[in-house]
Length: 186
Length: 180
Image (cartoon, rainbow over all chains, first blue to last red; front, side):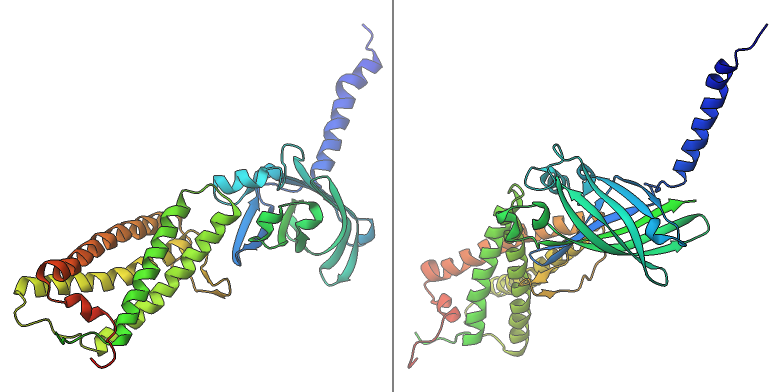
């Protein structure tokens, strides 16, 4: 009985290679359960915090070559939780995130610049509601035993992304502080 | 008939608090059933600002009452009326303080600090806690119902004295005319 080497490749080698490559990509993935991205803002000058419950992403960070680091974060806009269903339903509407049309907000970084110590400046494109803005954000990178933590605060203007309307702008501040603490298991 | 009356300070505080309480109640009843909108958030804030103002003026009212004895009731007043009046008035003092305090606690427990006039963030004296928020909401609403029951009796009693007894007692809670 002769064994066909090509069938061996297909049946054994390819699956093994696929699994191996998945394994190496998985090492770059953020832990969505442990990562936390929230937005704080003021309405009638009362502080409010909402949590983005569905966050995913991949970060390739090399401390020895930060400028070669890349990051891709995806946030499901319908997953924004302000603690009450009528608020959450409001934020999914056309005036706000328009979640039906724009299900995801994304950040794609093309480089980290060292700022000294554990701080880096990440620059990239923030896309929300179909609008793209080039932004920079200071990030603190902390390598722990089981994971690397990427944290910082990014002020975002609602107006720049067409989020909210004239009526809401009378009671809600334009600036939203996006607080992030991303956990990337090793 | 020249009768003793409350001080001008007491009279002013009495009517000012009556107007503020009625306004806060009207706003509170109207705003809770509204669909979420920018206006709803404004009404909630205005209601809380008014409530905190009521608290401040109620404390002033209480301080004035404790330091300035009200004019005595006529000696012919039946004892049950003296007791009923005192109970009603102290109930009103209690409610004028308990209602804004429960509202403030409700707001804090629900996770929304009270920012007076949109400028001064008042301290949260209770923690953010969903169960506590529900309890404070119930307390706030029940105490308000109780307030209007006591106020209804308060107003009825005043009208009884004015139109049935015709003893001019109502005039005690108004400003003195010049020369009297």
